[in-house]
Length: 196
Image (cartoon, rainbow, N blue to C red; front, side, top):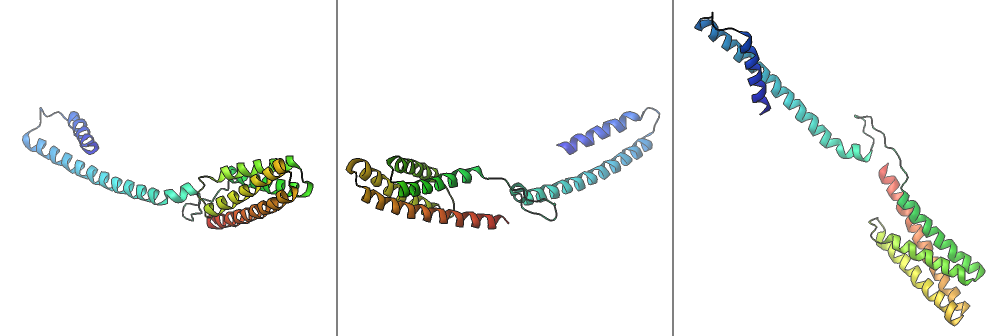
């Protein structure tokens, strides 16, 4: 469509500069032949420009993923820009807070410390729902194990006032939280090495 419009405009502008009144048929025929040659040259240029545009579009599509992800590409000279992942910061924060709160309960045997540890661990578990990481299932399972240790520990301490049973369950939650943290750090190291 664009090609037809360009050719038509070119023919109209070229023909409008000539006055055919004082020309004979041979002159008009030669002028039209010259116009046909000019149109053919313009069509050839248009085809070359179209091919060049198609090549550029193919290169852009080919390198779009690399450009979007920010990987190093020697041809384009793009360097990866590191940005902090705030989702991982919050996730690891609650995981560490949960572990340290359980450790605080093991040191002080306080009901409030156990309740805080349970609350932080539940938040940490909720943050793991729907995560699609390498160890997502293992992290979620370990967090559930810690929850299922801290909930009975709090019940034993609050209702039965059995400190020894609550202490034993809190040790189990500490081990589960430690396993979760180790898996988290392995996963962080793995994703970091994949980006480089």
